[in-house]
Image 1 (spheres, one colour):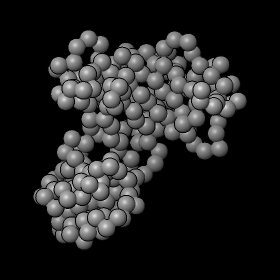
Image 2: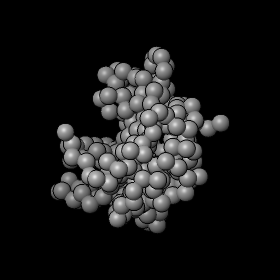
Image 3: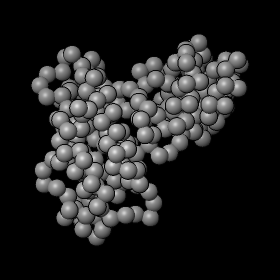
Image 4: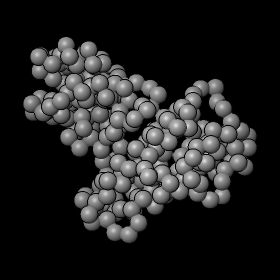
Length: 231
């Protein structure tokens, strides 16, 4: 049985026994005990998909309207003409052959790698290095794009990537506990609406089955599915 702190157990007594409307759920989440740091607010959607079927896989990225409260270290594989613009947009490093060689030699002090499509022929050899780290650029996640400067700006500001796990769940960060309830609501609604629009044609029955919110160190609050979508 997983160890739970006294603080967690005390908060668990406040946890609702049934799904709450989004507004009420956010209020409840904010009543939980504070930590010594600004906790992230995590969202989990349980989807009615068959995770074993490739045509039902859910994967993508989204720039949430209120951000997520933190920046990301981004590198950009791009042509010489885009290097200055990418760095101005927030890229930690930008370039082609030299940057590819640096990463291939083991440098990994970054969170997201973005690539221009014209460079993927060369970046592809980094698959064995970046793949296991979850950092390999991919068109499905939005990290392979001709508009590389915009992508750098969005990911530097905290654009989030997501993909379903083997259980059909989507996990993401939607902000910080210090965010106002209005800002958290805007982010949750935007994310859930985005997931709703991605429903695979082959998925049958209820698509979004369950939504839960939690802080980094708090119990979860289940949210009414209908209430988490834009009106």
